[in-house]
Amino acid sequence: MSEPRRARSTEAFFGRRSGKPLRAMQRSIRDELLPLLKLDLYQPAPIDLRSLFTAEVETVRMEIGFGGGEHLLHEAARCPKSGFIGIEPFINSMAKLVVELHENPLQNIRLYDDDATQVLDWLPAASLDGIDLFYPDPWPKKKHFKRRFVSQKNLDRFARVLKPGSIFRFASDIDTYVNWTLQHCRAHTEFEWQAETSADWHTPYQAWPGTRYEQKAHREGRVGAYLTFIRL
Image 1 (cartoon, one colour):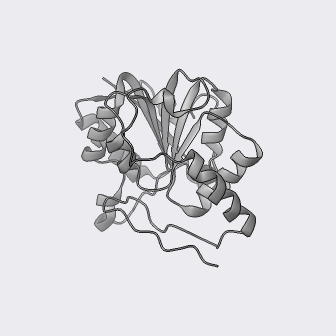
Image 2 (spheres, one colour):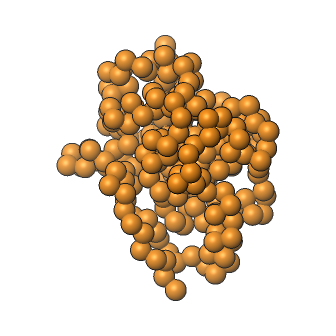
Image 3 (cartoon, one colour):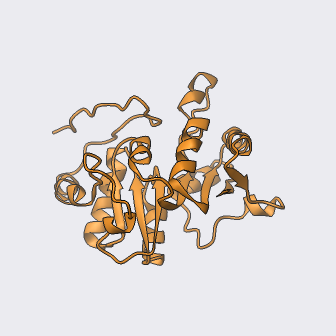
């Protein structure tokens, strides 16, 4: 049985929603577990986001478009005192992550399976301790640039929900998107690029586990850039 057709958000920055049909086990686990972990945007966001998690956490971070979930799962296990909101609209990727959580439960992860801007607009001001956007769809054709997630409007959203002094991290292997992100963030009054030498953006982040998209880029001869911006 094929997946039901999902309604597209008016501000979707992603492409297709699904790949191969899910296996029966994947679908069963997803249907059972995802509703328990998914953010309910029909309810007001809690003033203190730490209350979203069953684990006792001290900080809350967000990863937009977690893909295969390698980094999200690694960080959640490495940093048990941090809560993580993982957002991924691709059905197969979300199912893969939920199956991993079924086999190896973590109490400091909450999920959302649609447009990240919906969550950003739902969150209280100054409520996040960090936002990660790693290897997003670069939308390389000029006519599609408006679909790149990094934009002045979304940086305004980031600035609203990030606490002063927290960070926005961006990684990509596409030079034009790296330059695009640098230009947009440097033009935004609320963000400052944290780099002094080329090593600062050529070196992966601390305890970086790598991702399957990064591995694909390396196989194809592309090198990633790792940018860090502080919310002023």
